[in-house]
Image (cartoon, rainbow, N blue to C red; front, side, top):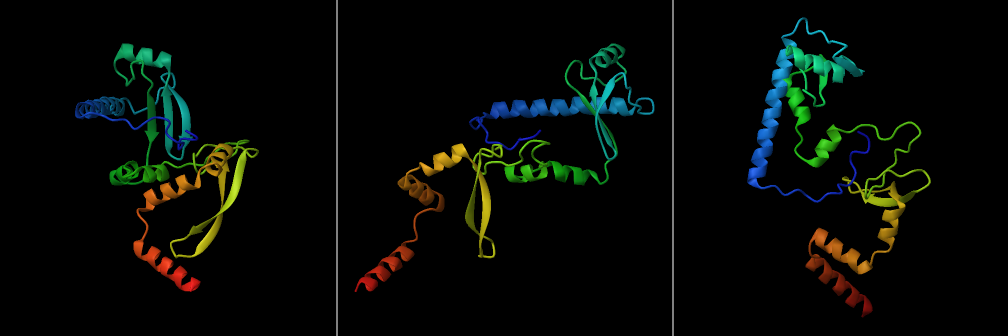
Length: 211
């Protein structure tokens, strides 16, 4: 899914303990149902994919992904011998993956949002479309509406570097119209209170310079 890492327009969902338990039960039931369907397919005759039942969607390396056809789902439900989603959208992935089960689980589990985005990353954009995004709202920007500014950064080795950063017109307009007081207040809240010793040293240095 292209453009998946945009700003979430919804507020953070607050769940009660009962809601969390219900969702966990729903996930467990879904796993058990799909595991049963998988075992039913694997126990079939030679594990052949019925082209009348399944339509090939994508093939990459040694994996093939199929989508269940509506007419095939009806026939499978009537016979009861084949795996079917019973009217719900269903995909079938067939093939071999190199590695162990531990490798697969390690690739699936992400400890935070940033790690999940890195593991699920893919090339942005498509033919004839811009792959530039605003680095504030992460929305796509075209060649005509994007604004590029050169900003300074301090690298981990404490060297100063300058990089070209892309923004959209809305974010640039919002940033340039912000009050300096609001910017200073936000910076203090982010980094904590100012270092008192450095402020005293600076004040003392200014007093000595005036004398």
